[in-house]
Length: 236
Image (cartoon, rainbow, N blue to C red; front, side, top):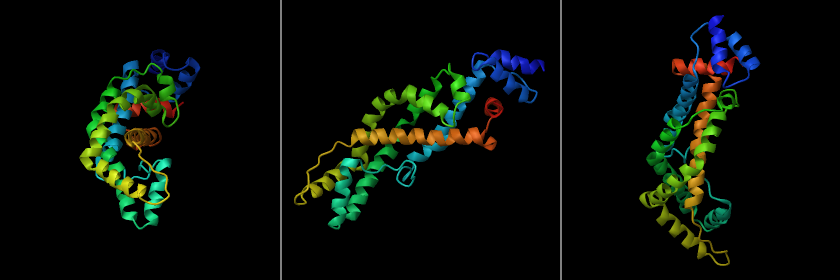
């Protein structure tokens, strides 16, 4: 009983007293969790998302074969895709889509440390909203705090990746052929911003997949700290 009350006293910074008392009364006997431990447990959950899910995006077809994050053409280029297919250039159109995803796969491979460092630097002052929030509360918190800074670092990586994987040449050829079709509206898009935004969203989508799993499946909590921290969530 004393240990349960200790949990309540330490965690008052995170949730209301009545709510925490209800949670603590349902927990098994065990050591109290400190503020630092709760914060570290949340970081571990995000680290798992990066290690188990985001790294999958760096493999060949990591984006292209993953329907959750596959990068399709932006609205203004749908006409390019359909126009090329109508004149028998479906293979070229497919290569154009694949090239966008290849650039994203290559960029994520280079930029994963940025996400890892961002997680390490997070202080969870609003841990109540994260720990007792919805299935993607930690991911949403991470996205809100890091997306702008990550974009500024990610964008040039995507631009370089276009050249590395040949996406720039593929799209120059693709758009040139499309613009040669009689009576079509000419296009000359800059795809760097679009692919950067889509790639970032894909990363956060996969982190959210892992977070949801940890929140809902005890078997995915692969450390003692994760099990203890998310037991607070289970017993709310």
